[in-house]
Length: 131
Image (cartoon, rainbow, N blue to C red; front, side, top):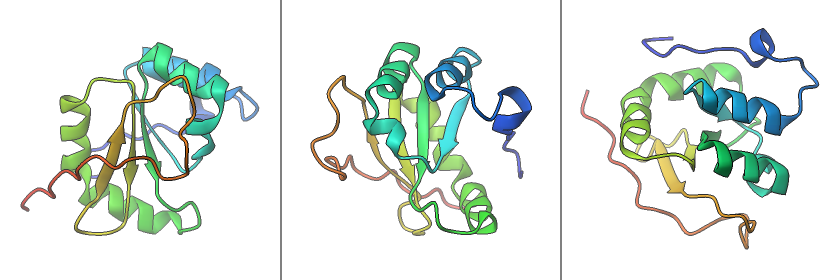
């Protein structure tokens, strides 16, 4: 997709594979993970897998949008995603949003303890690159 290499979960893992297993494997392969499953951040087993493996997780802000809208958001935010990966050592969580002013935001380091609220302290949004 426009310079992004996308790997489908089911190409490499069984549908029933435990999240902590595939998270660790993706991190081992050097892949960034894009998901709409925000429970990854609050589930203790998955959060520990992220921390121990150095995984880089991008959450789609809303899982209820059609895939075509998220594909467009990924293409538009591609450069910022690359900058985030290059400039932020894993483990980290970040959000991808469809808002044009801040496509990748709220980059945060996971801790063993779950976030105290659904919205954690926001890091400054990275600027949107010029076309």
